[in-house]
Image 1 (cartoon, rainbow, N blue to C red):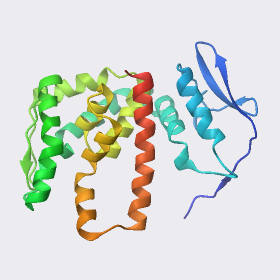
Image 2: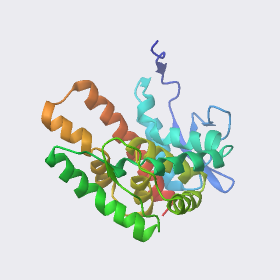
Image 3: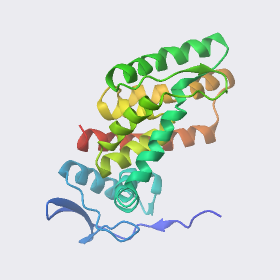
Image 4: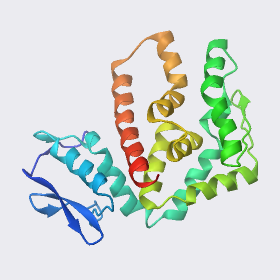
Length: 236
């Protein structure tokens, strides 16, 4: 069943100082998370961006256009109380990372995967001290325990809001390495999206576009842009 549309219920949007941070207010009332926590952020730039996405809503609120708000809600309601579980979940992405599973053919896809993914594996080995194995086909690739522990240490260095943004980026890209490369500045948003979409873009070239697939991809890009913004503003 489709969710009911929510009409815009406010006129004025503003940013107000609150303690050591900032809140976004709708008609003077600060926004709160679904669990009732005050949506407090430490960065004025992030608060301004949050306010802008609420101010940009039309007569009907589009949840896909509140991507930054979802990250803030997640950091407060989910990541904060369940930090160790989130770190463990992200570490598991390293056990079956997208970039470690290569196609056996055709040659054009194999070459494209290598072009985008092999430099990231080399970066993970050199910069993160986490060498990972890659394999062709669908058989599981067993990753070194020491590499997974190194990846876990890098994940755990993120504070709650950065961890929420990293989680969103990794989930959207299907790759912990792509997410960590974004967080560290190794990849731009465009480079990360291209790496995450290698297989999809190749399929698109073979079989043509699909309106529904294009809409889903646009929603994913919007969500990724929000995650990248948080990582750049709060985590660099």
